[in-house]
Every structure is written in structure tokens, then in C-alpha cells.
Image (cartoon, rainbow, N blue to C red; front, side):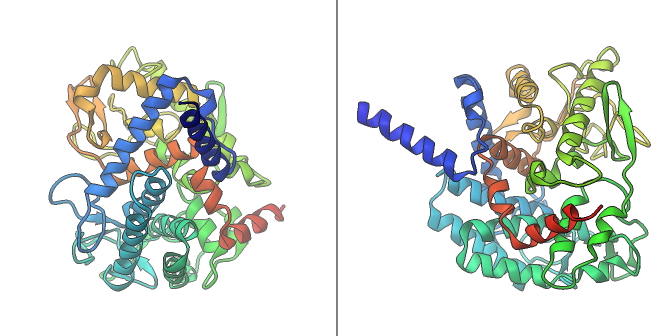
Length: 416
């Protein structure tokens, strides 16, 4: 028995050291750790089951007829690394699946200038819904691909780099100082550009650090940083107010290690998360869904379809009492105790309606007695990655080793 305990302890230490020494598991109770274990493993099952067996691509939604979103594939590739690291699947299977996905993207998934269409058929890779070539969704895909390449190495790394090198970032500027949100063959470039703070940081980081067709590093400081405050939190905010925008780039980039001369982006997300929670507390007298342990307003499914929900510091606030559990799990590294308390509260009180084989479903609204019946790939992805980053720092540890990220980081830090 003593030998067994010694073995378990040694394996635990190895797990911590391999992750880059960020692990905060020792700050958790046994009950909290067991809960995160369950949530993380259940969430990961989405990326192992909701896939097309021939293409390897993951569905955008657990709905039977759902297409694939290219951003979801980025989270899928990252999920395979986490599943392998946690020994939920065999290394040969995880490597083989990652390679299949990348080969499908190279050979079948429709795109142009290295960018992929936002939504594609999960079997054929062909464009659906007349969707746009999406700059941000391509960036999220590449983030997952490059992480998987760094994690698995070998052919996965070679193929991820080839896909990265194909992207014409300069073309997506469309002769401006901002990356365009997308392009359609029927009408050309979209009217909207990534010109103010949002989930854009992963996009600009990859575009600046790219080995080919990169954009000028000075463009990092061109997009607007609207400064505002809510109660005791002062931070650079996104006009939608959706909590996910303060998380997505952090899923891969460890912003604690980035010295942006203008903004501490880690602290910025901490403050935005605090503000989101406080807003829900302040509005709890009007919406029975909201409270100190029931918060997380973010773009999600809702009683009347998918909406860009956002509360505090939004240009046009959209909220009706809908809460997205993923928004809380995605904030775990920023506010660990408060996030775990909220996740356990939602699980303990509403698990029969909002929790299933893939973990938390998309969203719920007590005021309208509405509960989502499905899960979305990007929601599952941000939950899975940020829980792992909190527990071990795995994604950050590998992603920050990439030469493109080092190149971008150096360009940011030497600017004034």
C-alpha cells in the first residue's frame, strides 16, 4: 500500500513539473478537485464523440444536423492534447486524430488566402450558410493547431506550421491599419474591422508573429482601448460586454508573462470578471437567475436564440437573466474561489436541467424557465482549456514556447 501511495505522489509531482509549475491544485479541497476532474473530463467528451469519423472534424453544436465551426476545431485540437496529458485517451489515438484533423483542413476544408470559412460541412469541409472567411475563427483554429504541433511534435507540428504559413495576414488588412473581420466571394471584405478591444489579441499576435505575410508590429497599438469602470473595477472594456472576450486569447497566451507597456491584460480580465459578477449581484433583485454564485453574462444560447449577451460597460447591453456556465469556467484562473463556488452552486442546484454527458449545457434562464438542450464546441473548449490552465498551465506552457509568440512578445515589449 505504501508503494502505491508513493507511486501516486511521484506521478502527481511529475504532472505538476511538466506543466510549467503553474498548478494551483494544492489550493483546492478534495471535493473541489474531484468536481473539476469530473467537469473537465465530461466536457472533453464532447470533442471525442461529436465528430465526423471520416473527416475528424468536430460539430459546432451537439445538435444532430450541426455543421463544423473552424474555431471549434482549434479548441478540438487543444482538447486532444489535454485528453492525452490527462491519460483519458491513448497517445497513439490522440496523435492519430490530431493528424487526421489537420490533413482534412489542408486537403478538404474550404478557404482562401490561408483563411477558412467560419462554418463548413462537418463531412466534406465545404462552406455552408454563405459564411465568411473569418479572420478570428481562423486564428482560433491556428492557435489550437500550433499548440497541438508543439505538444505532439513530428508530423502534427510540420502540418500545423504549413497551414500557418499559408495565411496572408497582410491581405486581410485590406490596405488599412486593422485586420478585417472577414471576406465573402459574393461581396468582398466585410465592413467591420478589428479596431477596438475584444477577443482580437490572439488574432493580432499570430498575424504579427507569422513567418510569412505578417503585419507590422505597430498595429498592435492601433486598435482602440476604451477605458471605463464599473463599481470598483476600472479596465479596458469590450463594447459587447460579453465575458468570453476577456477569456479567448488567454486560453493560449499566458498574459502574466506579457509586459504590454499600455495595459496589463491579465489584471484587465480579472477586473472585467469581477465587474461581470458584481453586475449580476446588483441586478439580482430584477432577475432571479442572477446572484453571487450565479453569474456569467456572455454570448450564448438564450430563450430566443443565440445572442451576444453582455451587461456592464457595454455599448448596447443585452441581458434577460440568461447565464452561461462556460463564462464562469472560462474565468477560473482569474477568480478561482468565486468561480468554483459558482460552478458548484449551479451544478448542485440545477444539474438535472443543465448538466449532462458533456458537462454543462449552453445556458439557462430561471426567469423564463428556459434551459438549453445542447452544448457548443467553443463553449466546451474555453471551459476545458481554462480549467487545465488553472490546474497545470499546460496550454500556456507549450504555447508560449512557439517562435511566433516569442517574436510577437518581443515586439510588444520593446515598444513604448
